[in-house]
Length: 561
Image 1 (spheres, rainbow, N blue to C red):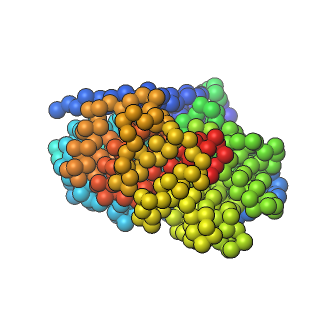
Image 2: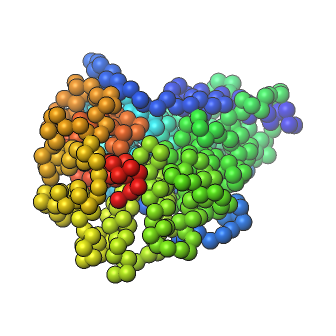
Image 3: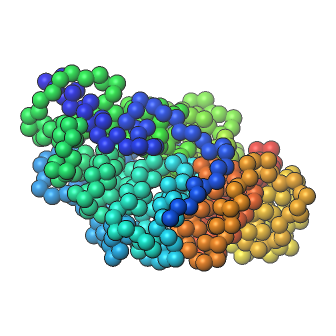
């Protein structure tokens, strides 16, 4: 019986064997390559705040969250009951517009994504395919990650020249998978309801459902595609699903090291290497209740560095983990992050707790990711009262950086009334709450060095708040690889033509995995200006906030404001 089960699991592990980033999941490891070199795009042919509570000591692993990923309307079970139809997806009632073929299908409307049905108007199908293929397989910046996800799941009419098939839809699903948004990938594929017509899309949907823990949905899809996916591995996977509900299956022995995602079908938790596994696999481990608690914490931390989990979920993982030695800077692993999170939540001097949160706000590379969102959580019970006027600007900066302008507002107001408002000038200038006259006072009080001051000017000049720095000024980040000039021109042209989706694709590729904090200043300025020009004002502003905080922290020798 055991050998039979292992044989079937081994076969399922080969199911779909997708190419590129998805193939990494079916292997034992495979470290994603950081984008350290800015390469030109391929030549053209024919987008959450962690509202966690202060930490309370707990039994290690006892209160780990069940899952961060939304499941289908019928929750997946380890031992699923038979069904005669596929469950609906997160927004399958919408099913996208569908008016221009499967490629127009999406799961979220414009009110949730800021992308409407005209997102691809004026863009060529071949160009969109080319640009989407060039998107980073991993996006660490929280704001940039959310921008990418919102674009990929949006409901929008297919671009001009679309062939009526589902190539663009499948590419969107696979990009979501590579980024670690497994539930979103499963929901998008499921909303299209076209797996009978596209075996490759069917394989991607099944993979996403397994990674998201939606075992019942995956087994239903295997049954629904039994006439299409007739290869031996798919048949073996279907037999395994039948066995889980009392059916019988045949097979031989197998090496457990090659099982991959099929372990999830058998109710056995997956494993991941926090240093090398792709975000999708990290998410699968972090959200699987059967995985060991310490592995869930390490995988969740690593997934948070890729902004593939919410800050709230990461905070719950860290809160349930045991405390330890508090790192002196940004945490580099889950245990260090848990210790820092506990320290932020403990009773003590407010200023000290804020300083600890500042240490955890950015990654060691200066990126504002979802781990940073989690670190702000334990401070959310503080109220902006007069006694905290001295730390008000620092609290406001924490909230601005994680994208919570509403939470930042009372602290910004307190900073102003306490005489400390000058420290918030760049953020308030972007919100049109301050004019250019406050720049000198801010530079003096912030104590930022010239190179990073110049970088902040570069960021603000994208919104016409100030003039850009002079051509001979040294700007932090100008020693990084310069962006390909033809891509900058193409993005500018797309923005001028109000081709929102195309502009965003260029922007995401130019920013790369490291996002606004790591971008060359020229690329950063042009990206922010073009996003703002296409009416993506909030998205551009959030990327600017992340970049300003990174420059401020680094420009003041990592000490924070």
